[in-house]
Length: 84
Image (cartoon, rainbow, N blue to C red; front, top):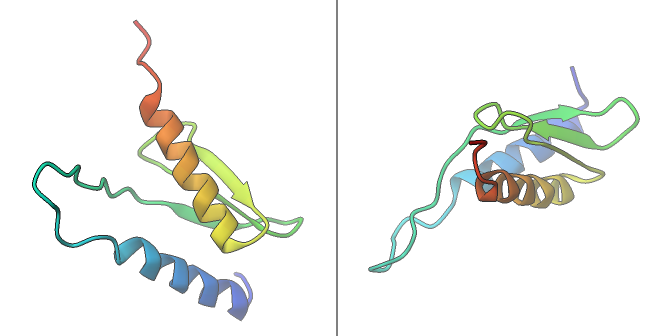
């Protein structure tokens, strides 16, 4: 089920994801919100998946590293062209 430290870090990560910018400047791009499912890895660290973006997964030793890697995976997924 996870350690108390894991749940504390997961709650902090959730707050960081929810506390995005509230107001947008004229012409600014609105942020996209996606669900990220975080798992505790058996060998230590964490891994995450984005169910809305098939194949979009990442890992990290610490929660901040995981979140940075997930953002990069999402950006890469969105930048790819759909198959023709």
